[in-house]
Structure formats: C-alpha cells, structure tokens
Image 1 (cartoon, rainbow, N blue to C red):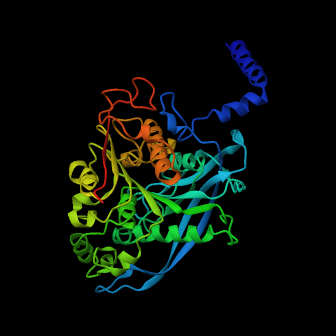
Image 2 (cartoon, rainbow, N blue to C red):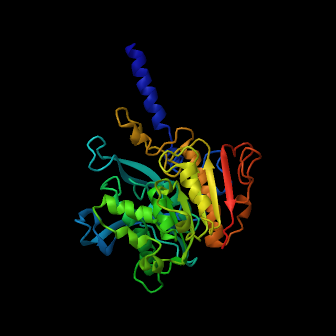
Image 3 (cartoon, helix red, strand yellow):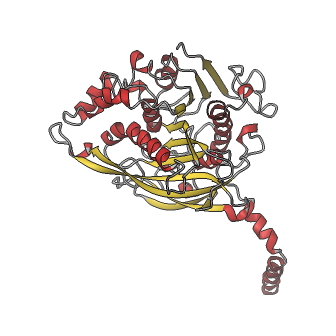
Length: 436
C-alpha cells in the first residue's frame, strides 16, 4: 500500500510538471464567467468587437432631501454620495489577462439574520484600461439595481454592452445596497432622482473639453436607462411615468407627513422640467410598483419613450398580470415590448448565483437573490443580452435589428430569428405601437 501511495504521488507530480504553462493560461481563459455564451445562446448575446475597461467613481448629488431624518414632515438636506462603476470600450486586448475580480457582499446591512458576507467573482474587463478614442462618442446606458442590490448585480449585461460600443454606468444607490440598506422611503424617493443626476453628470464629464477620462467619449444625446425591480420603478419615472396620487399619499403616510415624493408626481413643475429628451430608450426588468398603485392610467400616459419590459409570468414580488403586464398595457403612448419567461418569478435580471451563495447553512434567500427556480440563470442572461442588444441597437445606434424584435408572440410555435433550432421555447414577446 505504501509503495502504491508513493507511486501515485510521483505520478501526480510528473503529470503536473508536464502541463505546459500555456495550457494553464488557457484553462484560466476558458473559465466560465457571467455572461459568457452557452452553446445555445442566441445570436446577439455574443460579446462585441471591443475589449472592455472598467473604472469606479464616487460622485455627490448636493442638497438632497434627507428623508430618513425627516421629522413631522420636514427633512433636512444632505449631500448624497453615489458610487458608480463605468464600463467602456477599451484598447486592451482580450484574453486571460482580462479576467477581472469584482468584490461584493451578500446579505443585508442591519439584518442580524442575514449578515453581510464578502465574496468575489470574475468578469471580463480590465481595470483602468485606456479608452478607445478613435471611434468617436458612444451612446450612454445608465443601470439601476434592485432593492437591495449593487452596481455589480448585472455585470453579465454591463460588460456585454460595453463590448458593443456603449458607455455603461451602473449606480450603487445609497441606502439601497447590500452594504448600506436603509428604510424603504429613501429608495422610493431617490431612485429616479439618482438616475437623472447620473445622466447629467456623465453627460457633463463626457463633453469634449472636460478633463475627465470620459471627455469626448459620451454621446449623451442617445441615452438608455436600464432598471431592475426598484431600478425599473425609478427608470420609468425618470422617463416620464409620474407617480400617482395614491403613491404620494402612501409615501406621506410612511414618512410621518412628508410630501417629498410629490416632486415626482404628474402635477409637479419640478417633475415636468426634469423630463430629459436625451433618454431615447428604457429597459425595465420586473419593474416594481404597479400592483401597489404607484401608477394609474393617467400617469402611465406620460411614458412616451420606447420601452422593453422583461418579466417572469410567476413574478411574486412585482406581480405579473396586475403588475408588470399592467404597466405594459397602460403605457399606451410608448412603443413597447414585453418579453415574458414562462414560470419564472422575479429574478429575470441579475447575475447567476455566486459560488458563495451555494454554501450550506446560508439563508436560502441569499441563493434566491439571484436564482430562478424554473430557469437556468445563465440562459436568461444570454437571452437578455440578445434582446437588449437588439432593442438598444435600434433606438440608440439605428441598427437594422428589426428581425430580432418583430416575432411571433409564442416562441414555441417556431424558432425565433437569432435562436438555434428548437431553442426558443418558454417565452412570449408582445409588442404595441404607441398611440402618440
């Protein structure tokens, strides 16, 4: 037995030493990373021609209402910090060296039953790489996560879009992330305001004469907002769907009398003046709020921007028939689509569950923060990449991607264009042209 054990050890060492260095690098390059294409990934899910750079910034929106310290309906002002991640077309070469490590936490700050636990995961980008400057300015995409969440929640999509020639800016919404989760009124009030601030901030820094690295890189006249859950709630409001009187009354009640949300309502001059014509498209993943009365028939008429809704037919957070589909139906003035994953619940937008969420003993919701019970999340990611690429390509880049959007409603009837034979199952795509 001892002789056999020694032989096995020697054989293992010889085998390891015989592996060329190049094969080890190749193994690293072949590591599956969020957003990589599965064998049945649809056509437009593939990464684009550009390498991807990434940088982190901290910006401050000054003089904002500090709703969490409101007393008797009155709130002080504070300077609201916002950390963002910016992905962009870069000059670095693709390959194993571009395997970046992102630092994240799971759990929820302030919840002893779900303490924050640090973990890391990989992406395909290069930290602080030099941007591509020879191809002019790129359209802007602003990404807003759910509650709670983070700017890293959808890296499969943010990296993918940057590789296709977009400046992608994902926001850490203060008081709404895994690391700093705070009471809900902050999220209700600040989502659309954060989004509009970031659009303006990036547009200013992207001007040709700024001294920022984004100078000359941003075509803010062609901007899209991508939001998931509470991010969808904010994205729709930022694009013109005012909050209803019912929502404002609900907010007033839960904040002890504050009417601050009225500034994002239909009658508010501040809301009307905040309309940003540079926003040319919205992608709303499982937007929260309709089932709770956040919008009504009149306020939804304010959404006139082309919008692509993505939902699970069994969404038990935002609701489907009385939630997301009701928004789609009521937004009569927008050219709009609704992609539905049959039997999926709420998690139609995030990265797949990280390895850290698979550890025994963790709260099941750490896994279900990401996972879908009826779908492979990697499959959903690829399909999302495909349709978001098509939709934004049409509205921000004037690409001829109509064949990927003008489809038979039921994906089971025939294989949708861009999908390999027999692979477009379990989905529905609805489309309505806006009335105005």
